[in-house]
Image (cartoon, rainbow, N blue to C red; front, side, top):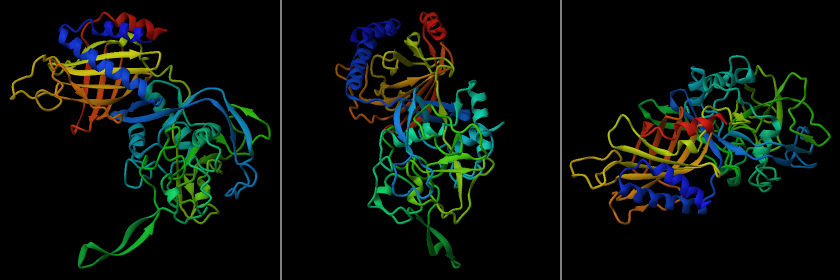
Length: 469
């Protein structure tokens, strides 16, 4: 494997005309290889929706699991969770979080129907028809991304992802010490939003001082996505927050072992899963399921399982990433630059065997500039960053590692060693000659977007050939 890396690096670095560049890039590449040997990289990818709004999906591995709940599981009050074996024969990807108001707006061009006043809250109060029907979110998302791959998950895919390899009532354990109703429990609080988690809301202000609240009430409500701890697959909010539509029609499970099930062939209602902020804890178990009219957008108050009323949301799935635009390949290995700003360079190295990308972001200066010359990335002398991470389709999701000093002629430049890094970078390729870098460097407090192009065309033919394969 090191020989392959070295050959790819040599191909990438052949257009770097100053030997000092090669020395520094060699240093950061060695740093990257050491990280690969230490880190466990999540397999995920991000698509950019209209307006540059990101949506991240995480890989869920194929496998066999027990779906439903075993006889006698506490909390199964509806009796519709027959325990049976399911085998999913192919990997798939599922939204890291529920679809948010911002993502809905980007795709649909309309405000969220209900989003708690925050665009990072999950969309709620949307019907199955509005999502998966004609002119719905799925259809418009596929049209925008020029594919047919995005869809709702099947019910089996949803539960496989929610369980994340576990067999307990929740992905974080059975939580038998907690009530199944609306009482607060710290173990639940760390992992899900349900009716036992509330925030204080002002219901009466002082008439003489409108900034002073004189009466509060504790109310549960929908919460911003991603605030709870992720499950073992890296997915957030699979328990609670909003009920999530899936593709299947609602009906009894098969009594037999099944492979790649898609639900009943006939039926009126569709399945919703996962529980909600307004539901009792038991309704958020991994096996919990209900059926609903595909034209409905939520559950009325005072049902068996809701203090409600509450709305329905969803998350997006995709089976294959092979048809999602240009495929990142070794033909993208090269020196790239920012045509809008003199002096910004990017060395890109792709590792197809492990679906990882390495990027060095630098200026063309080889000596420390005068103090009155500002670098793009901060103070004079702060001359380069590195980034590395997984890629899939046309998009790479990289973690940024800033340098301390970072002057190219420094004998021993140092880098951040914290695995969390200094920020994030999304690199998306339009074709074999053009790309876009969206970055957020938290340690420097800067964000932005930079177009990139190749410095030389030598690898374009290789890129096009590999893309065609």
